[in-house]
Length: 148
Figure 1: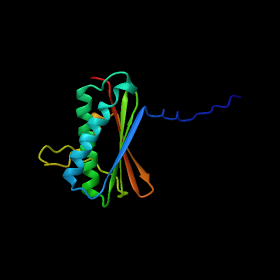
Figure 2: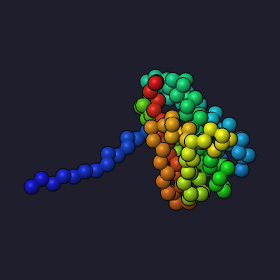
Figure 3: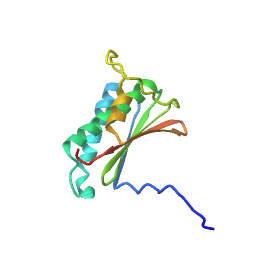
Figure 4: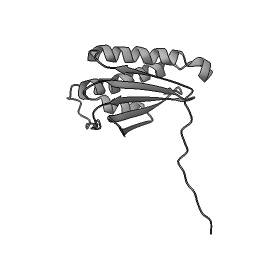
């Protein structure tokens, strides 16, 4: 008889990580700041990644950050925290907020104005998960940094 042991492989430690908390800033200020924070973070990547992140991937990362931070500052009370974790070929983008409710992707409706954020994130990322956190939730998106 052979015993099979299966275990989920632990995610490797990120090459680089950084986080920032957005509290009392107006929503538009938090979103612009989060986009700039993301661009600066990825600009610091070459020493640990051995090559720069392609511009198209930086722009997609900023888009994903915009959508996730927008959801947090518009729909959750209190502050939110943005955590960026750089891996060799991917960027994990996490946003923590105080609302336990998961964002809900809406069906395709070209007549709807706005509320397409989750759809956009799902379309450009490798994965999107929502995890309970001690005081709300963590929305985590994994974006490939490999050029298309």
